Image (cartoon, rainbow, N blue to C red; front, side, top):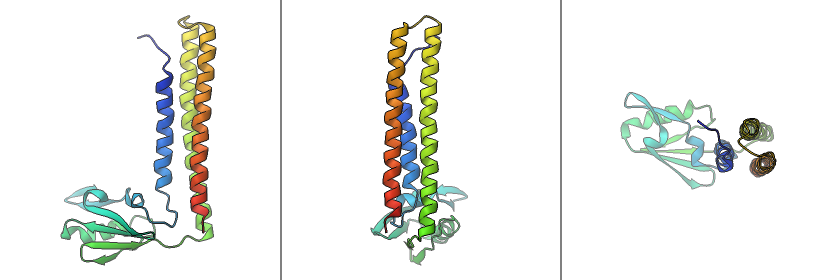
Length: 186
C-alpha cells in the first residue's frame, strides 16, 4: 500500500482535536446553567447505566437553574441519586417528575481551579494538534526518502502542514481565552 500525503485529512484531524476541546470546555461549569453540565451523568435505569438524556429532558428555564423532566415516574429517585452522586456539587429539588437544580455562585478559588482545568484541556488539544503535525511530517519524510515526492514539493507541503498547525493552535488559544473570560466574569 503506497503512502500518500493528504493535507485535508491532517486538517480534519486537527479540527477533531479542537472539537474535543470545545466539548470539554462546554462541560466546565461557569456559574451559568448549561444542559451540557449533566451530559456525563448516567442513571441506573432498567437494570443498566443509562445516560441521563435518555430518561429525561434537560432544560434551562432560568440562567442559573436547570430543570430535569423525568419521563418515567419510577426513575425520579434514581435520577435524583445519580445527580447528587455525580461530584458536580449539585442538589436537586424534586417536584413530582421534575427536578430543579440551582447552580451555585462560584467563589474566586473555584474559578481559578476551573481556569487551571481549562488550561490543561487546551494543552492536551495543542499536544494532539502537534501529534497530527508530526504524523504529516513523518509521511512527507518517508515519501521523500522513497523518492515518491520531489524535494521542493515536500518543502511546500511541510510549510502547509506548519500553517495548518499554527492555525489550529490559534483556534485552541482563542477558545481557551473565551472560556477563561467566561469563568472569571463576576
